Length: 273
Image (cartoon, rainbow, N blue to C red; front, side):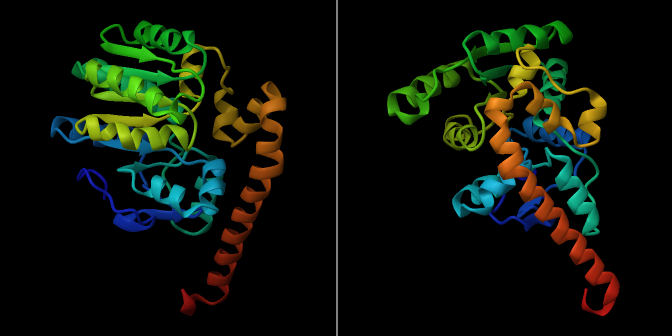
């Protein structure tokens, strides 16, 4: 299981549940926070990846990106279709664990333990600062050692990546929230971990913008029923229509269909399971 500070790049390794083509840790949000706390106390760092349908679809076509996901110390499902698929396969996951929720839960942990955090990315320059303000408003004891919204495309040049690296290393955080979208954030995190091996990194996509309030998040009932994508689509149809309707929805339907067919075959012929 994750927690040793290393994890081989195999999707079903360490007792993970294989769903959507990737291996997922069957942990609750609270258990993720406890795992990170224990590792930080032991001086071991790591990274958290929260795959959703879109990430599973992308990694299905790219072995290198699948390894990027699977090599993370913790992989938890940020997408209700993955939870439903695992349930159909008879290997249930306890709950959906989103990067947006982990941002707050890990900030609360950091505030209690006095661990400094760093917020990287999130969009325009004011977004990470606004997110920091919201986090500190809820957790006044939170120590924020830095925030930075690098310009779009910074990671395409060695100079851009080096600037981000220098600022982060100088800040010496214990927890780093990186909101640049998959796979850019996760590729950057792999490089940054070499400089901060005792820190934990969360690749959290739009979570920083959610926390800042610049992008609204779906109501709780929509998140719980797997309709958060519809809320986001209604808010940003031009940007998200192709991703959700053309790419992700058919992938999710095929995934759930295959899992249902597997379940029915097992019921029809238990001796072959």
